[in-house]
Image 1 (cartoon, rainbow, N blue to C red):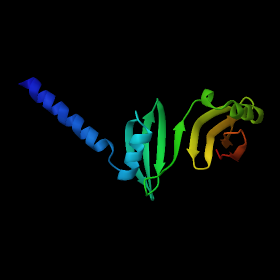
Image 2 (image 1 turned 135 degrees about the vertical axis):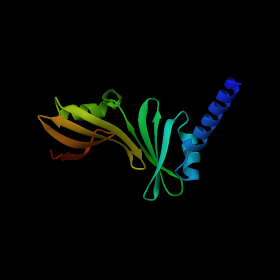
Image 3 (image 1 turned 90 degrees about the vertical axis):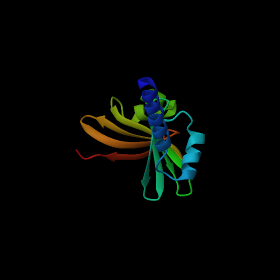
Image 4 (image 1 turned 30 degrees about the vertical axis):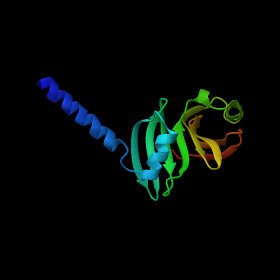
Amino acid sequence: MKRIILSMALVMTLGAITAFAGSGGNKKAQQIFQEEFKGAEQVKWTEVNEYSKANFVLAGHRTEAWFSADGELIGTVRDIFYNQLPVIVVRSLDKEFQDADIIDLREATGQKGTRYNMTIEREGKKFKVSVAADGDILELKKLKK
């Protein structure tokens, strides 16, 4: 009898988790999300102004997907490792920032293409850097301490 009650409690808990896993975000965004990001884990929806944002883990990487009020996928942002950068981006960074440490690295993909945003530290100074997929440095901003 204890096993039956325990099994029923487990089934009800899993059902509740599944039912609320997609809460937040608009229904159209959730539908597109499920089609585009199969295998996503730890999905959490939030509303940011008129946008819906899904935070999740996909293939071991923290990822965000942004959706318009109409449910259209606007773009994604994910944490990546340095060795996942395109060679042309690595060459550009090596040329501009020799012996620098990359503290934070994220890939942002949207309607305007892909860019790589990072924080770089060199000689005790930190910089916010944004590099296009073709290696062009789009933004270079010194951060205050």
